[in-house]
Image 1 (cartoon, rainbow, N blue to C red):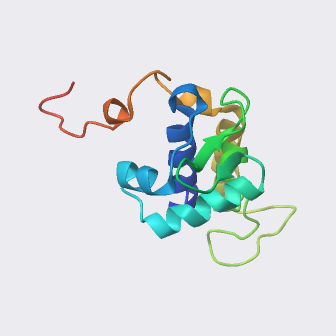
Image 2: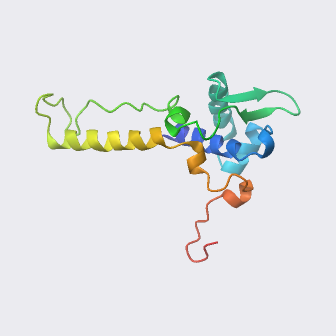
Image 3: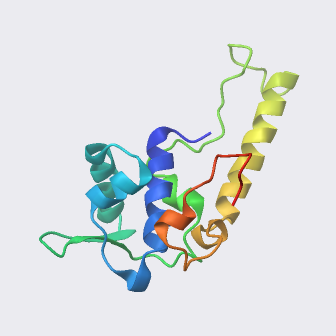
Length: 149
């Protein structure tokens, strides 16, 4: 449902939410840890900083830190800068639907989009963090199904 840009923004925000003592973290370090192209992530982080979600500083001790409270920052707010979260008005069948009697495909799509938007609007960054004290390496997903942690 999310574009790569929205997903990168969410991943970076979650990583910053886990940062010990609100210390700054560079875009380069985050890019390496998260496996995201560095220049692309830097642009995403700059936009989040312009919107007041992150604080940024240049220099040797610079980087980014989360300004927003993870318990108050919803996924919707986190990704809205990068995603069109409106319910689509176009029909899955390819044309406009009769607004009085829309087709079943149009109704189903509207239902699933509304449900997804509700979940995104009710979910905070804190809800997505299993344990805010986890080290970044420990928080990476384990995709080895035969040897789960």
